Length: 117
Image (cartoon, rainbow, N blue to C red; front, side):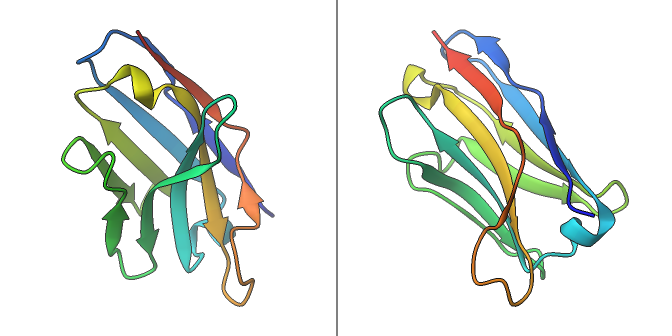
């Protein structure tokens, strides 16, 4: 059963903060990688942050120092804490998972919109 449900998006002013959540089914949460992506209108999808099954996280240079990815294993939930938001962070944010032996991010949530003005 594959399920990824994002929440927490919204509209904020520049300099503000938001925390995105992605709750996964148990099987999906046990993927080798989970990640946050974003895509703004007219732009390519961008990898924002990733975490592997050992809990090692990486964040994109464009958000380093401002965004933090964390996990709550008990809740099967991935978080993206976003601070010091900028207008260029405006995008649809997606949670995704790469199951073992899949070769890529094949499981995606529906997305949550973040708008920074």
